[in-house]
Length: 148
Image (cartoon, rainbow, N blue to C red; front, side, top):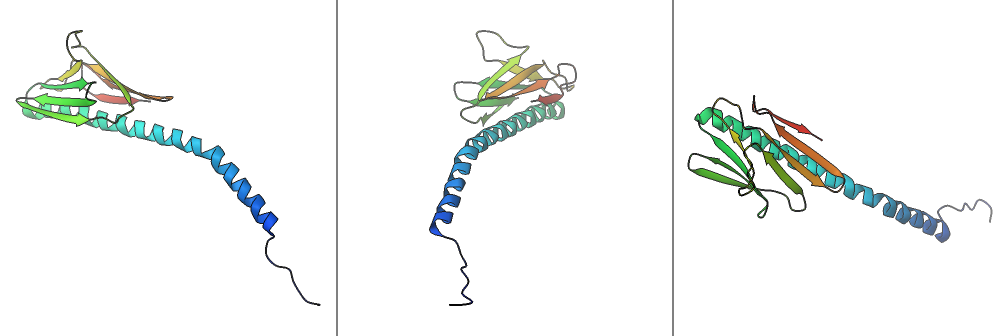
């Protein structure tokens, strides 16, 4: 049988490749979960920063006080101005804390934005796993910055 070529793979070669692929997947998969958690936390911090910027712009455009308050039991942030109160739900599994100059032990913490664009100042902290983001509101200018 001259001219007969053996092409293809043996069953043993296919099994070895399959075992290597399974081992690589089990080693890499946990890393993807951590990356996904960090990306979700970063997205949450950007959403909260946008909400705080919105509250500041509402205070300026309406020439009235706007209050941002954290409700940890329901996992929501609220933006209140005039007679309107809007609730914004937060992601489950994220530990959030708000520290504001207007914090009293008997009340929920809050940050006020004034008609001139300034604020009472404060910060929002987000934590999940090994990641953390800090959203700070400057009291003098009312500007919102994200550190993470």
